Image: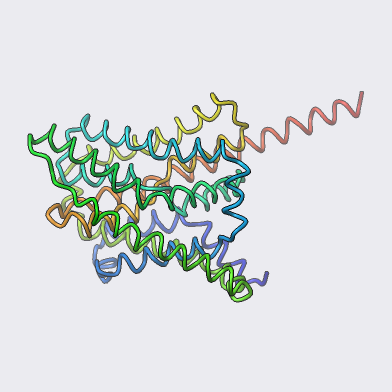
Length: 335
C-alpha cells in the first residue's frame, strides 16, 4: 500500500471529524452546503452503498452461515430494539408528525457503512460488523418499509386521530433502488473485476464518508431554522435513541454470553443506523412532510459522535486488558 492509499484510509477513519466539522459549518454558514441539490441525494447514497458492495465477496455471504447466532442477535436487535425505541421516544416527546416519520425511519433502517469504520477504529470484530451490515441492508428492502408503515400509521392514529397513509410499495421500491441495486453492482464488480476493484478500494471509504457529509450538511443547512425552532426535544430524542442502541446492544450481548469483542461489535452495529437511507426515504416517499428529512441528518451527526466515543472506550478497555495480561505474564515469569 503506497502513501496516497494510506492517506485516504487515514482520512476515512477521521469521519467523525468530517461530519462534526461539516455540520458545524453548515449551521453557521448554510451557503457552504446549499450548493448540494436534493435530487443528488439518491446518487450519493448509491455511491455509499456501491462502496460497501465493492468490499464484499462471496466469502462474506458464506461467513453468515458460520456465525448464525451472532448474526441473528445483531440483526434481530436492529429490527426490534431500535424500532421499539423510536416508536416509544416519538410518543414520549410528543414530536410533530414530520419528525415522527423521520425518527421512525431512522429506527427502522439497517446499519450503515459508518459502523464498519467505527468497528475498525475500535478494533472489534470487523468480519462480524461487515456481515451484520450486509445482512441488515439486504433484508431492509422488505423489513424497513413494513416496519415504517406499521409504526407511522399507529403513531399518527394515536397522535392526531387520523392515520397517515404510507405508500409501502413506494418505500419498498425506493429501498430496492438505493440499497440492493448498488450493493449488488459492487459485489459483481468485485467478483468479475477484482484486480481493478482492489486498486480503488483504498479510496472508496473516504468517498463514502464525504458523500454522507454532503447529504447531512445539506439537510442541516436547508432546515436550519426549523431545527432551531423545534428546540431540544428532537435532538434529545435522537440522542437517547442511539445511546440506548449502543448500551442495550452491548448489555444484551453480554447477557447472552457473547465475548467482549463480539458484544462491542453488536453494540456499535445496533447503535449506528443508515441515516442517509432514512433521509432519502423521507424525501422521496413523504413529500407532504418536508421536515421528515431532518431527523436523519441529526441522526447521522449524533451516531458519529457517539460511535467515536464508543470506539475510544473500546480501545481503552483493550489497552487495560493488554496491560493486565502483561503484568500477569511478568508475575508468572518472575515466579
